[in-house]
Length: 582
Image (cartoon, rainbow, N blue to C red; front, side):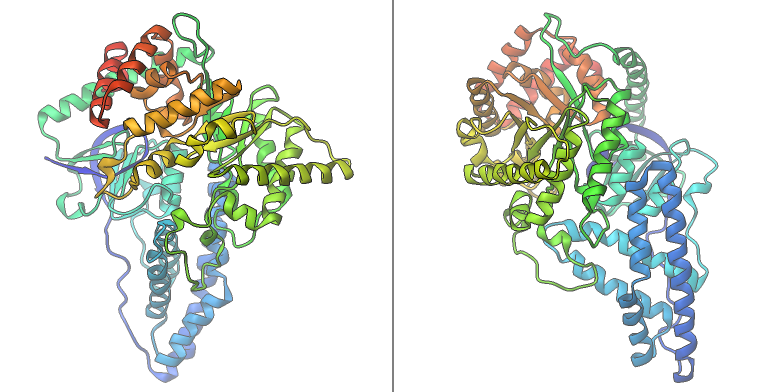
């Protein structure tokens, strides 16, 4: 038995036979052609590009029907890039000038672009490499006539293991046949990870080399909750996971009965339990699982695979989709754009990138440098506010001045809409994310400026502890239970309470059951989690009293290390509801 640890990108546990996908790309049979064959190669190239672009558009329509237009946009972007004249010119130049065969010229151009993206230090570029490989394989498939095994044609249930899966392959997975997948490569924000989450297929990525350690048909376990792949589990491990899977399925069926019940402690303390969403279609998942609304609507999907900024109409239509699903009474908190400047660069241009983009021009810093971009989104959010309980939230605020600048621009947009006689809610609630230590420390000042806080624990933990959770060499330092993080959260909650404003937790910490009692005991009454986590968090809330939670929080705040805090919280949670801690 071997245990591999990676990045959990879609929760759940699956046990089954491995289906191995080859980790090699197409083999290029010929490197050069004679001078009189160059024009023939160029014609072959043109036909292959046309066919690959058409195939990508077909995938777009298929995915659009299956998952929604935002997911289809990934493959629309593939079609645009394959049809890009710059790509054709680059490949043709290699054929004419160096007599490369069309296949080899395509591979050279695509790998050169992939290498440039892999060199980006912020991790964004490396996650886009899979998209390039997806396009490369489409083109080479039409040039060489080779096909990789078609996942959509599976006839039996399997667990897919591969070096990586392209977004196209992931979108074609049938959850009835593919019970989980695990890959050597990949990141939390890759298109493959996003699609896996939407399909709700348990998935672990970024595991490092393992495909040579397993054969097709061998039994494997994918634990999408903990980010673990177990190869050839021993009988004890298999029995434990089988028991866990069986008991959790039974537990999940009981959780369905909670859909219409409130998230309320045994002694009557109500908690607003809301959902985090990436795409409009996920709002339906929130309703299916009994959410009180959307506590975090990330809007970066609108920029997914696009070279131009989305229009006001595109923003508005996306927000309207969520409002129509949830109704006008449930709150929808829309976070303004949280991307880095590098993500707006044309994909075929080699531009200099920031040396440390995590501390650079991202989020509101980028928006305050691009007011047209910022105001376009604000106009759409304000227009949507006339149709439901829409709230606006600014991410990555690190100073009081930044927040005031955002509010000033919002006021300007309101004036513009008034002059144009366009309806909006003039009293729209304004919030700010608390996700950098400076904001947590200045919470008492920031609380005077907004209607609510939302604590983004993912970045707060990362910036507080100076530990990238995706860097395996320091990942052990990354813990929401670290006393330094807890003290900052406590300061935010106390500041919000004194200012009589609401405070929510919307990071991954709020969706991990072991932290639920701690957060309630610290005074939190708003939690926003992934839709899949809503039922079990609701069950836990309904299984405790506030006195239980206050006692847990007091003891946790007394402890001195993250290890002690986490061990204590797991023990207390297992005592109350053992099903969620298996």
